[in-house]
Image 1: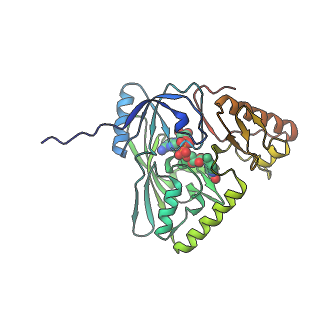
Image 2 (image 1 turned 90 degrees about the horizontal axis):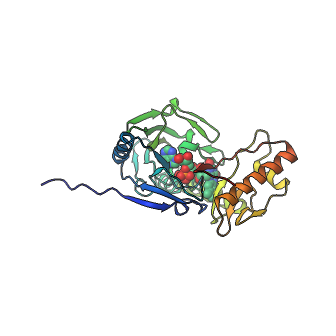
Image 3 (image 1 turned 120 degrees about the vertical axis):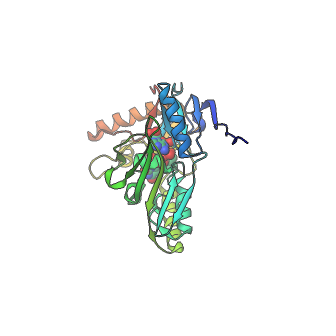
Length: 298
Ligand SMILES: Cc1cc2nc3c(=O)[nH]c(=O)nc-3n(C[C@H](O)[C@H](O)[C@H](O)COP(=O)(O)OP(=O)(O)OC[C@H]3O[C@@H](n4cnc5c(N)ncnc54)[C@H](O)[C@@H]3O)c2cc1C
């Protein structure tokens, strides 16, 4: 009997506002949700043969997509690629679509410490490794052992962490592509202590950042020097400042929130206003941390 071939999990004309945490963005012509690194390879190889490329999507928690949408196909790992495997000696292998809060909880339950600071970041392992996401003194690049990347032609590469240069919100990897799996080297610890640390950090976040609101996290990177982007924006009078249905949060000025039906152009106008105000006040050039897809214009 022939083995059953599973139909690809895919969809056309998906509104990316449903795939981003800020809830903004027009449609993508085609989106595919692979179930394994093998499927990622096969999809990429056939697109490459047809002269096309996929954009990589995680949880859309650091993305601003144009209101008009995009004309590229998208591959998203969050839906079907969240397997996590533990092995003796503190090594953990997670698929690229694993959500960081879930990874942190699973590691906590297994008595493994090293990712609890990342528990409040609503992104995937793949997105976080690409951005070198971090919080409360820990960035993901510090605990990774190796990363598996599928390049544009569908070839799989395993890259050791020592060959990747991690810096603030940046990872310089010798191979570009979709992060499909990564291994982390964590330290043995007591579950109670790990969960206590997670709770402490999440309480700090809840006090100082918008919680449960539609946002893409920090709008701007931390500028050089001691003052944060949030402080500069607040001093320039932008805390709570609104354009259309987008506003700098009243709780933390470096977070833009969608308070209704905000468009990408509302957000871009707000970004430009924030940059102008901080430039005029302090001579500092704020650089967006958020990634932008499509022809985003104010
Ligand atoms: C409430 C809130 C709080 C946040 N707090 C923090 C914080 O404390 N620290 C922090 O660093 N960030 C924070 N962020 C931002 C965001 O969560 C991180 O940047 C996160 O790592 C993005 O992951 P993602 O899966 O959502 O990526 P996406 O937003 O989907 O994509 C971001 C970039 O990564 C690429 N990408 C996504 N998946 C892959 C993959 N598998 N392989 C290759 N490239 C990929 C995309 O093409 C894009 O360029 C916060 C965001 C929110 C909404």
